[in-house]
Amino acid sequence: MLRRITLPAPRGAGEVPVASIRLDQSIVRALDELGATLPPTEFTRPLLDQLAGAYATGRGMAEAFGRLLEQTLGPMGLVVFDSSDPAAKPLVKQVFVRELETPGVSARLAAETGARLGDAGYHAQVTPVDGTVSLFHLDGGRQPIRTQADALSVGSASVPVSVLIAAAEREPHRFSPNVLLRPIVQDSLFPTVSYIAGPSELAYLGQLRNVYEHFGVPMPIMYPRATATLLDSAAARFLTKYDAPLEQLRPRDEAALNRLLEAQLPASVERAYEEAEAGLRVRMEALIAAVPAIDPTLEGAARSTLRKMQHDLGSLRDKIIHGAKRRDDTLRRQFARTQAQSFPEGHPQERAVGFVYFLNRYGPALIDRLSANLPVEPGTHWILTI
Image (cartoon, rainbow, N blue to C red):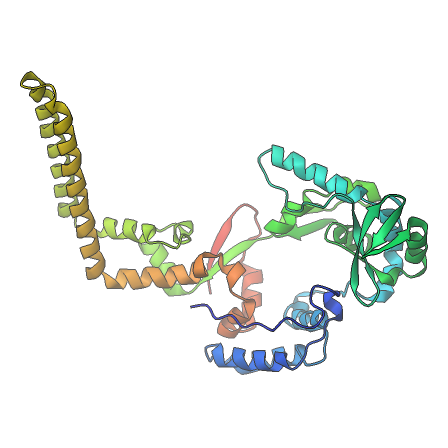
């Protein structure tokens, strides 16, 4: 069963950049709750110490996550960069200036591509509001910028375009890109040959080719990241033994379980049911064909009787299956356990279970195992047993 451990909404959430939000004392309580919730393993204490060292009271949210990420993946060569670093903003100020010189163009280009995707049977991941400028102005808070007549609005204030352009030239650290402009800023800072993206990222990056061209920034080759579900050996054996496709475990009902139970019915029972159903249909069809010679109005009654008999026979079959369910509690428990691992509460594992759970269970060597064993070929979802 999933346990959710959350922080209360910190001060400034949704109003200021995440990087400026500081952890308060509630992080200590959350880490204590996590320690009480994680199943004890040989890795639990070092992992909790690592988390406490990264997520310390008074530290920024972005810095805390960056520290944990670097500690976990740094040995693999990952370099963590804080995009909110004011020292980096002058390097991309021309992107900010270009956006202010052509206000609303990047949003319009992304919206047009999104509409074409919709016409082609896909969906737009990002639907920019008309007149949106893909920048925020930072002045204690995070103010959206929108087009209006001959000026721009920053929050509720109207500001001449020339004034904002001059501000971007002089103080670029007071600006921050929104979701549409972040990839442009990123690839301006770090020219990229290929970008490995998840499903949601691929969806919105698919809307940005014309935006890249608008800023004169080469767009990287997009490559879908590998996806996998981590199962223990018991769950993997269950799927193999019953030849159960993983995706059939996602619906939060018993349809897949019923199919498995049906497959476990003795052949004699299933054969007897099929013979009874076929015999009923043949004999009743013969009767239906014969009764009009006596009274044509009885054909409808005969067909209605056939449907009732077929319904009753089907109900008997359902009772047999339910009897098998009661008999085969082991299969039911194995199914529920594998389903809970694969699709917690009906969601893909990676969307529901934080990686801290897996580090606690398998230890830091999990990273090396995934790096060595997870194939990177696109288009396939892998099942891995650790």
